[in-house]
Length: 307
Image (cartoon, rainbow, N blue to C red; front, side, top):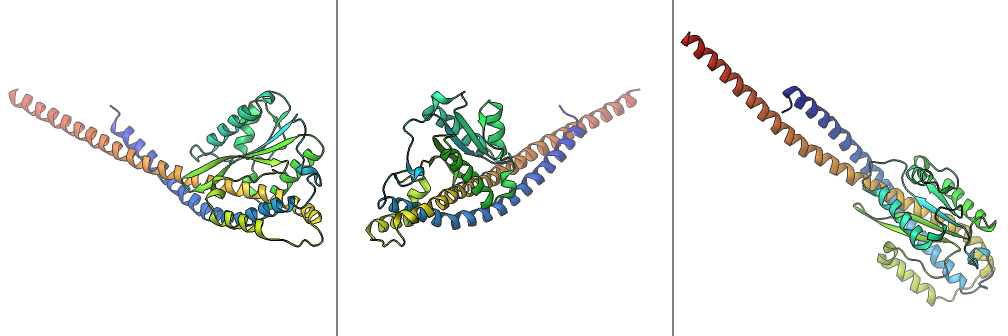
């Protein structure tokens, strides 16, 4: 059995750890509130511009914009994988990396291990994971969430579009965690380029009654376009792509903070349970030590009397 000093030392260590995890939980909760506000503000516009793009496509020549046209043969793929820069968020990063690996096996198995599958990793965890496994990396976006901004996200969208137009890749998909609620996320593989012809909906979009109401209303409205649908579409597409990627990183950021808050809450509770066990072990060891001392004193007294 460990000595009383060892148990006291361990109790002190666990208490310190519990204080740290409790503080991290509070920080994550504060960040989560801000992240939720951001994503709840971004979603309506992202949903609406997605609907507008789909509606405008019905009034223009399908070949009017290069970003609409799927390539006859998909030779190279860019996969944008969004994770966090830091750990201590439970299975948040592990789950989305597994989803990315599954998407590669399901959709691009013939490209695995070749330079035709490129990874643009947003966040340190994705960058470290894929670079260590020999994937061809595009850019370095470690530390992205330390200074989260629309301008930095817009630069990533521009890089994806430039590569598409220059035929560096023939398809772009995004893998990310969609914020569902504080304790759970949806792992999404979403087409990015070419701009999907059909309506791509995530579970959160499917559950949003307002999203479907706007979608149905848009089909019934006879719009008058000024100057014309094609010109408006050309102006909207860059905004659409940038804002969709902005929504993606906001979803991931909110999901990360929720996952970290839950993980730290669980760690704090586990530390409390461990403290209870250690205190019980300490009291038992202390009681055993006292009993041993009493027995030794009694034995010594009896020996003196017998002598």
